[in-house]
Figure 1: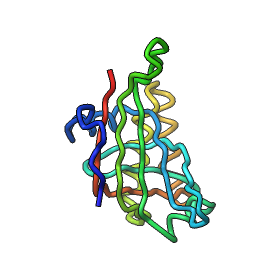
Figure 2: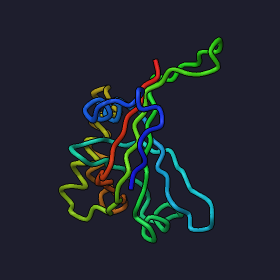
Figure 3: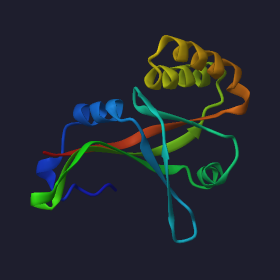
Figure 4: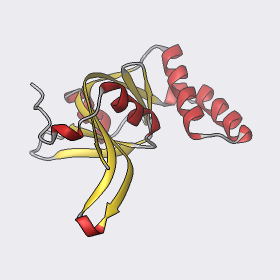
Length: 157
């Protein structure tokens, strides 16, 4: 089902791919748009266990597409630096393939939102405001969970 990596010598272990997911600052969610085009959208995220959590508004193109086809790919790239003299780049990347699910359990939603706040906000005042905002925005925020079926990582140094 999933194709072998062509440049297999750049492939990294699952734990290394998970580390790339943990360290990444944003990822691109890729979906089938059903009209012969793909649809990719950059999002903030958090990686927990074997899942990736995202948040968004409860309506819109992305949500409509996900409800039609929940199979997605999520990609993250870190440490990308051009190597002009070699016409290439150094990078670390991870690709996660899986099914996306709308989280309905209120405790799981809150935990995901709080974990997102803790990932992106480090100043104590911002962290406190973010936690408060997460708690009061549960009903107007859609939390999505990608349950990973297949994960690969690749490094070019």
